[in-house]
Length: 459
DNA sequence: GGAACTCGCCAC
DNA sequence: AAACGTGGCGAGTTCC
Image (cartoon, rainbow, N blue to C red; front, side, top):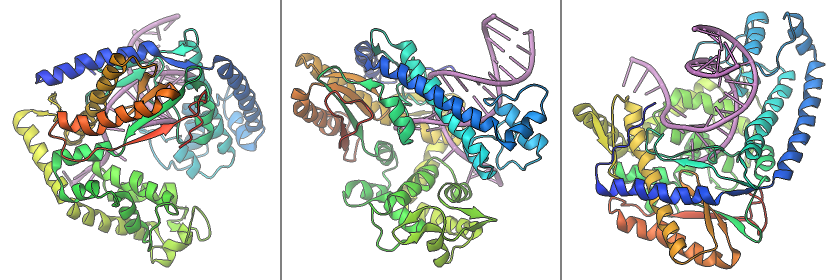
């Protein structure tokens, strides 16, 4: 993909220019890597992988597979696995790849209910950790530091990307993978890692474009919680408790709210939610199984609420979708206006002064300006923090950036001042500099122990 | 033996 | 009417 950087204002040009310089300084600083740990962990993972491979090769499933091939099956080959599952065993694929073959991704394999495949999924996960992350740290490190590149010229939406190694996709959600990888990344001796991220930045930027009144109310009211409200609706919970029902809030956020904002619709959302958070058998919830909530099992709760099947659930989600777009009418209208503007002029201009032109489909036209402008907020703040850091000669260093967050290697003695400056720049100075930001901005900070790795979050 | 492709999977 | 955005990267596969 050819990316054309197209700044239409001096401000936009300056943002790129200064951004590149600030990011280059972060690249130069680098992130400390515990190479010994990475090497040891690789050996440990290799032993574990070998054990799981032996175990897998000892199963009936594998022996059947082996029996049907001329040479030994390659455990890593999804091509061969698909040929066996869907060609030889004639199983019905639950999903298909873009080229039309039966899918062998995690979701698809889980649905087949073949216990032996769990080992294969575990092997996949461990290999990912070893071969994608730990290997890359060892390969890319120089004198115990990795220096990821942060690119501003490669992404269609005007976001950034990162490579060699990619600093923007280090495991976080899966605890085992997170710890295995992040234990390799350390602050400088006597320092502590600090991660500052904008909360709900994309939704706030979205509101700056659409000025949707419901969304503005949610953002301006500190007690309001859009995802919790939707979760309450989806799962029919009375007395919704943000802590007790955290899983359901996450499900609503990642399984409905964001997909809908990105252009998905109720059928996919319902299927996705049911697949990931429910236990289905023949289109009905399995009683007494699956995830637990304060009310008991989610499946039992939904059955009691009159939603025993996927079909009923899908209709329920359809109603919620209708209500959702009624409530966010301003956003729906903005989508239509924005799309019409693109069709008329052939381009769209971001709030930050950059232009997206060329052939785009509707979902691109809606998405790019939000992603791009949200990242530009982070970049503006990063540039300012970097500037103050230099003039005040901080020992604290910026070492990376992940779209809406900045990662620093902090001198503990400077921590409270650093936090104060960051808070001022991110939440007060930025909206002052860019008056189109008509919503409050907010940041969260994760602080890691002195000399502690990136796996040891404190608060 | 390398380029270009597919697939799966990590992040936001 | 149809239906989720942006990347990087490793392994396997196919093509030349």
